[in-house]
Image (cartoon, rainbow, N blue to C red):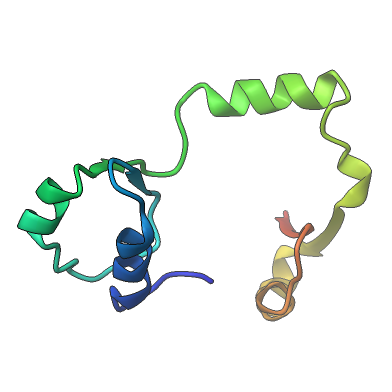
Length: 105
């Protein structure tokens, strides 16, 4: 979905949360969220924010890769020399899931 410049989908998500539920924001919206304070209180919602990932995540992911729990052979890595940076950016803009693009010196 990418970054959102409006809050409509986020508010729709909050409105879909059950009574006593938890909403977790994990980046993606660069807009002011018009939150209804009384609605949050009466529905007993918990709102949490999380930017990116915890510091422990990279080491945990490396451990899962080493243990064979995350297969890397399903990913396609496309390397471009620095001189072709614009082409790499153009290709990366069209990338599908599990397609990675790297710039090499």
